[in-house]
Image 1 (cartoon, rainbow, N blue to C red):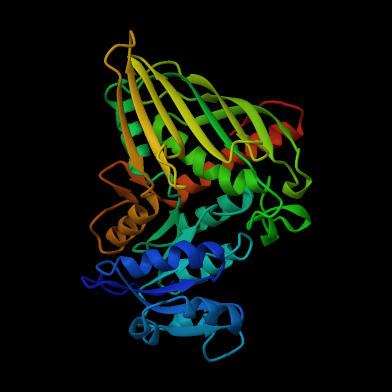
Image 2 (image 1 turned 120 degrees about the vertical axis):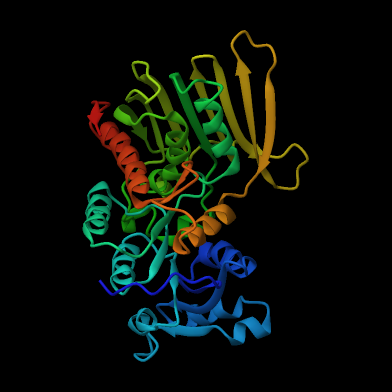
Amino acid sequence: MSPLPPKPARPLRTALIGAGIFAKRTHLPTILSQKSCFTLVAVHSRSRKSASALHSAISDTETRNDVRLYHEEDGSNNLAALLANPEIDVVVIALPVGAQEEVVKRALQTGKHVFSEKPVAGTAAAARELVDWYAATASPRPVWAVAENWRAEPAVLYAAELVRTRGHGVVRSFSLSCLLETKPDNQYVATGWRVGTGSVVTGGFLMDGGVHWIAMLRACLGGEIARVAAFTGLALPYCAPVDTVSGAVIVTPSPAGGTGAAGTINICFAASGRPFEISMTIICETGTVSVRCGPAKTGGGARVFTVTWTPEGGEGEETQEFGFAGFEAEFQHFANLVKGESSDGQLDGRLDLSPLQACADVLVVEALIKSGEQGGAPVNI
């Protein structure tokens, strides 16, 4: 692995690798908006056409003129050239799973700090292999963080703090429900690598989206999900191989004590009449933490989080509302890690975007799907 450059005090010179829907709609504007953290200096895609389209999406002409174009149709300006460029500090990778893992590894080997998209890999075996490889590399090594933005949502951090403090860190039971209506014209159905015969992720949408919500749940539980038993189904053929999983899970005891907890997980991408409705309930020793995510009551298409603490007896309930801010927060956290302002993949002991956590989310989702394939037989993680 290449030696690391000194940690910069200036904004990080950043390359965006990938020109898909999410890269153009979310990664690009986030990098451009956080000028104190990042300076975009390069974009890359496989073809000249897609790289040029991403480049053209930079609205400010002066900024666009300073961003170099890389693609695989030009041997002197391809991915290898980008990774060899000493003027690039970090790479943000937003590629399809299956292609992304190798690029992550190549970037780290050249000494680039990496912020890659979820899931960390399409299967548990691939995730374990990549994370184990990174863990075995000699220190000091480049920072590698994984974009699990639901883990970084202020609402989730607040809910986790309620469990630890007001709930005394002892979980008795819990439930996670994720209901989404997926129509055939959904832009992500057409990507090919998520669902259908070209899918490279275990369970298709269940893995691609499921790691978000498993990350949220695991961030709040304290203990680790150790065993699952689930059933799966497919209601929408265009969401194959499966679009629904329902199961029971067992969590190991948290450091605060107790005997561990049993809970339920239900994820359905075929929820007619429920375009986007996520809810989580965690029953603690002294009360209940509830998290709801859905359209704001004011309308306009915005989604909000509502976090409620209900103490034992039901009196004195407290509710707070949060907007979506996890994506911006995780980018800032990544910059802090690279600059040495946070350590060990964590921020204040709360936010953990390490590959190890992302791998654990993949393991849980794959275990649920494997249990479903086995008719509900329990699967140990």
